[in-house]
Amino acid sequence: MGQGQQEKVATSLAGAVSEEISASLAPVDAELERRYPGDPGTRQPVHTVYVPGDVFAADTIRSWGDQALALLDEHAPDAASFAAVLGLSDELAEPVHARVRAKLEREPVEDLRVDFEDGYGPRPDAEEDEAAARAARLIAQAYENGTAAPYMGIRMKCMEAPVRDRGIRTLDIFLTGLMEAGGLPDGLVLTLPKVTYPEQVTAMVRLLEEFEKARGLEPGRIGFEIQIETSQSILATDGTATVARMIQAAEGRATGLHYGTFDYSACLGVSAAYQASDHPSADHAKAIMQVAAAGTGVRVSDGSTNILPVGTTEKVHDAWRLHYGLTRRALARAYYQGWDMHPGHIPTRYAAVFAFYREGFEQAAARLARYANRTGGDVMDEPATAKALSGYLLRGLDCGALDIAEVARLAGLTRVDLEGFAAPRRGDLTASAK
Image 1: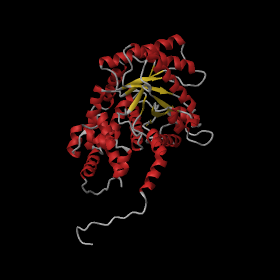
Image 2: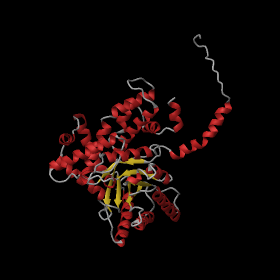
Image 3: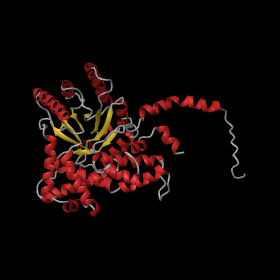
Image 4: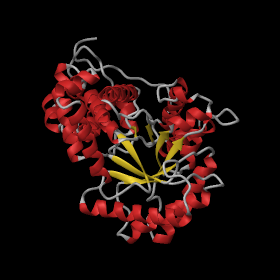
């Protein structure tokens, strides 16, 4: 065939065949859009801090930041000493240390949950009533005066019979208090713990529906996290993955799945000395959670460590190394959020997160730039990889590990460009991969 001669194109199927197939798959198309809408594209906090309801105060967030800074000053006062404890490279030592200190001064907590469950325990009803009302007042004031964390809310008691009424009442008092103070903040997050059956998730949905009706809110306004703390929440008696059914039972309100390290481990009979987020039973549970949540818009969070950085410098350093290692391990497994239970944990939380993004962002930006410009390189990337690369850079920007100027310099892309690659429509991703 001569150069420039048009290729002859022939087909054998009638157009009606494609139309019939499309019509037969229309219900599947609708089901895919409903069940797997993709990531919401909003910021995901790198951690959740739990503070008991009787301890939470107006200065809690600032106090955590100040305590964390004081620990750094005492046990790792400069970049070199902090890097030596954590094994950071010379290239990362100064930028990570500087950004950790800046973060502790500016935004020490990204997500805070006032705890009315295990961290609070059983109290007289009048006492819990007052604590729930106080939490609502203080959170509303924090959002009003600009001292709030980006995300804040409560963990209520679970839907099991002995504490169900108490949990419902605490949630009602808290949400009502926020409404009376001016409305629900955009960063509101609620956590439903110890979920075992999907019907408990359904009950939470009905409860929130009734509150929305009572207060004239838009249907679906209030979402919640599901805490995975029992073996039954992973595997049901019929062999199915209960957690997948829980996501569907939430009817679009589920925002996250949070792994409960110690309750889940104890449920399986793991002895106390081995209850940790890197135990094989924890890896299994989180892997099931991750697969169940993939594509649904529900995010997965790792749990916590109970080894606190307190005492002598040697003990603090040991606890820091443990926490840093667990956080880096979780990040490598795509668990981008975890729990922090003590102010001493947040320096190593941010050090791990910042090191994770800073050590890889130049390569990620270069690969994404080549993909965007359709230029060659030593790696052939597909649309799904471009999505992962841009998501990586966006998470680094959101937490403060990266600056948009340095990403733009290397990738030649704006934040809007990154968001476009990170959240393509399903059809765009499939078509561009062909």
